[in-house]
Length: 538
Image (cartoon, one colour):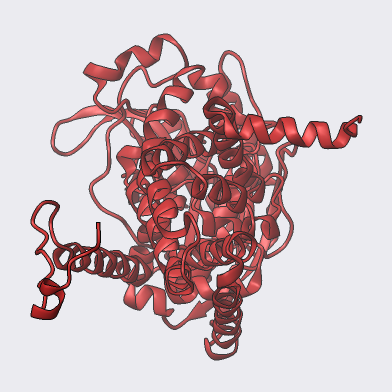
């Protein structure tokens, strides 16, 4: 009897999946799949099932230890896929970093296994709908620490184009959106793998849908409070000797073309000025001329060595506001630096990374505080702006702090020129939509080389994108907003809720272990007099 070819392939696939090496490969691939939900593919709908293959694999692990290993391997696959555009800069060191950071998914793998392995009861399956998403959120919280790379690739960020998800972000930030996506993934996993608990899975899915619908209806929209005309200047890719001077000249040329368009503010991208304006008064004077010709301030970004008031000398990245008379004195120094790109954590231990890639040869210096700048002049009507630099737009707490400090418009000055042709520019630009929705404030994402974009207070895009092949300027009529979102008011409460869920799980398991007699100390059953009198027939 001949076995059909299709069935033979299926049998081989099952044997491969049963082998430890086959399972390891499958875990890495399953983790990598998740990256498809983010830009540039931006398959936002895929996020709601992207974790299902990984979870189905982990729940069938023979032991909890093996499940933890497969959690780690899946985390490694996810980190490499999510940051693959760093390979030209970090080479093999990216895999080393991904392997280290992937360890954070090992406890989550064990958590999935302990919640869904075997044939879980309906109660255990229902509990997994809260426990498994809470465990994932702890990973997102941990890696949001700047020293571990920052919150790039939070699962909720994949929903940057989805209006109901953006509304959820105004309630609980990107954290609440991540919980929603994880809950749906867990419910689908239960639906597929645990037939006796399908009612719980369907119920959990319905709760998610009904909750999102209720939030959509109940949460108020940002209240419009006037408009402001903001221009973005994107000079495009400028390489070779003297690139800083030629980039400045191109930005200057594009800015002049904006004359007569009644602009309130012009925004240049990150590292748009390559010298300290105090050391180069000629550059400061040229910027002042531009400001006078437009009747608007110019927000530039200076990437240069300077001495600060405390006497430290080093390279800072600074947002500097320039008016008709030159720099106004309002400036912000970047606080959160890109690991390996702008500094090397534990340089004494990891400094060898400079020999295998384009890691920072010198650590840049950090700013000490966020800054809200008020635009002078009657035309701008005292518009208060909150600047961020580069990947600081990935941190929800930074835009929240600026909003609480009175910012009416958030501005991120960025440059992804090293990663043209990759997914990085689109990923970076998408983060501004989440920050705008969380804060209830419009956000401008201005870059040197694209993608540049503007988002309204609800996270919806204003005007068109400036793509990575554009050298141009554009003016956006940005609606401002007033009021405070619940996320700005209450902060990261979904994180604390997830911590409470995990604490309750630990308490319940601890209580169960306490009630269970320890091995070797079991109390022998007490026999009645009748049972003692009756002896078995031998």
